[in-house]
Each structure stands twice: as structure tokens, then as C-alpha cells.
Image 1 (tube, rainbow, N blue to C red):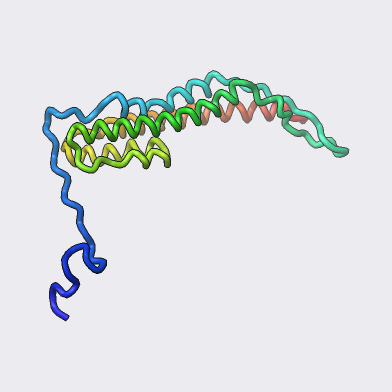
Image 2 (image 1 turned 90 degrees about the horizontal axis):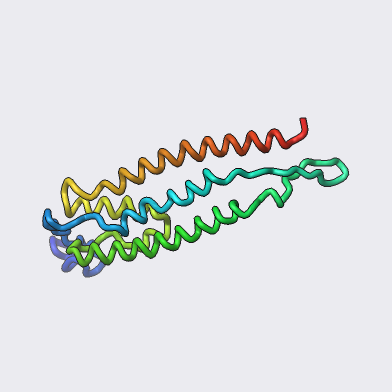
Length: 175
């Protein structure tokens, strides 16, 4: 069998390469409010976490008097934190869709698909920024850097908060 025996690209399982994405004009904006909201919405959860100061109560269960965390220890701010996380997840998916539409209107061919936001807003922010950086060289990566900075700050603040919570629980347990 010689060259070309497999037919045209796309026929009989031959790989099809998508057309390269054309660059957009230097005047075309690569950022919009939607991508910044997707990137920065987790700050709301971080603020609620920092304001939440749980008080843990221990009760003793069973004949052996095993210390157990009392369910009443989980207060309104805890459930607000959980509900806010889910709300931010849904809003991030919606904002990713709106950002995707805006990129299409601005001339970006095959922008990173908004549905990746279902895996997490960070996935969409990184993928979107990579594609935008390809079609707008030397631009488009600011949301990734903001996400990295937010992650670093969050990591430190959450580590401090967790150490405070563990310390509180340890003090509530009998010696």
C-alpha cells in the first residue's frame, strides 16, 4: 500500500488537525468583568472563613464515655460558608459562559469552552488564559497570575485558620 492509501484527512480514522487560531487585533480587549469575577469570587468564601470563629462543644457518648463533637457546634456561619461555596460555584459557571460568549464576539476563534468551569473555576481561568495568550501574544495571562496570588494567600490564611480550629478542639478535649 502506498502513500495516500488512507484517504483524505478525517476519512477512515485519519487524524484531523484543527485550523490554527488567528491572532486578534492589539486593540481587542482580552479582559472583561466576567473573567475577573470568575477569578476573584473565591475571595468571598475566604472572608467568611476568616470571620467564622467556631466554638466546639464536646459531649461524652456511650458507657466508655468517648468524647464526641457535639453537632450543635456547627453554627449559622458554617452553613453560610458551605452555601456560599455552592452559590459561587454556580455563579462561576454562569460567568464563564458569559466570558466565553464575549470572547467569541471579540473575534477569538474557538475560545476555551465555558463548560470546563464545571470542574472548577480555576480550570476555566487557566485554560481560557492559555488560549487568549495564544491569540493575543504578550497579553491574556493576568487572570492566571491573580489566581496564583489568590491561591497563595488562601493557602496561608486557611493554614492559620485550621491551626486555630485544631487548637480550639484540642483545648475542648479532656486532658
